[in-house]
Figure 1 (cartoon, helix red, strand yellow):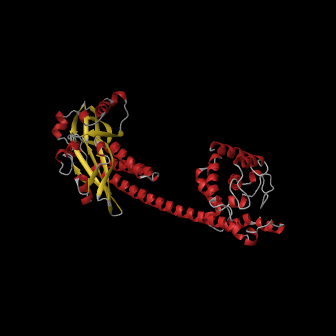
Figure 2 (cartoon, rainbow, N blue to C red; figure 1 turned 60 degrees about the vertical axis):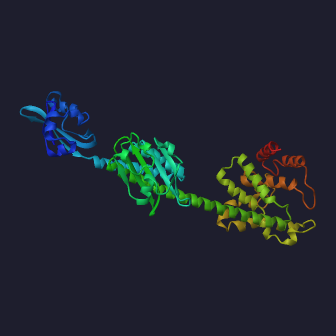
Figure 3 (cartoon, rainbow, N blue to C red; figure 1 turned 180 degrees about the vertical axis):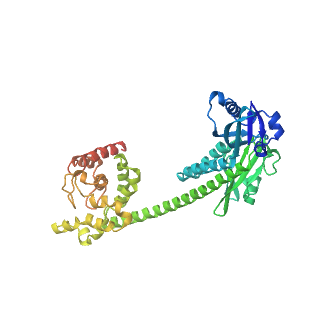
Length: 457
């Protein structure tokens, strides 16, 4: 508590001395008040003149003070007007809330970083966020992060900034330097006499620096690296605690990105195996149906290319490609006596043959991973004018993927050699496709197909 009158302190208690770092005699006699409370001199004068100007008191506010040793402290200040010896004065009570504000700030920072990390699954992005926050929040003049590379028995410095930017990508053997010390001990580190630091490998890094601090990156009981920061001002224990909080959050985010990358690679491997299996099925169908080898893969790739031109979203391409590979899967339900018949099919044969899209639907709809790929196997024999099979769909009732694929399927069939005829010339095949626009094929898809073929002559 203190009392202020006529521009100076007339009373201070021990707690105010403890908060400010000044003695009673210094506060009462020699210390300029502006060195203590930003704007407090004005507040006190306002309080002194309150009886004349009607400045409203009491008033509660937060103020930042500069203590005797130069440290910034945040106080909760309550000012009231009083009369002391028949003269107006201001009595103030203060509570040091620096630690509380620091905790609130830490929570805000952690929440902000947590949200930023949540939406980023890339290690480089996580490290960039960490670097920027450390510079911004802790006012670090140099930052570097090292990640342990267990396979190579070395740390790979993958991110650095500020005065230490030149360290980026520089390898350091495990156990060396301050980062090695942090990784080895697993303990946080703070040195406010940076020029005498025993662990920094390159003393020139700390030229002009007052303090250096660091923490290990630990997640799930494993040390995966270290964060080191330096500054031309003194770091406090609060700064070290915030550094630990940021680093713990960063370590968890890095582990998550590693798991995400591992899962992605496994998913890619599974996808490759999955697609290889589908291509194997397609090849088996070709061999059974005596199609030209490679027909299914070839038309699947060409269908994807045309689909992109037609504006189908990229996340649908894999679904379309699977449907193209399995377009004739329903023929597994057609007896060999009909499918491989040398002569002309009878009317009854055609009734059975035209059931193969329905067989495809019945087969694929039972398999969860193939349900989205049904459109092509089920609908690629539908015609734009409604004269196709199995359901006689017309126009845009036919799924776009099937409208795209039907053109590709006919084009590849016409331009490939068959046991019963040689391949058509491309010009002839193109004329046939164009002629079928509006009857067999969607005219808008035909237009885009013609452009695609002409551009890739």
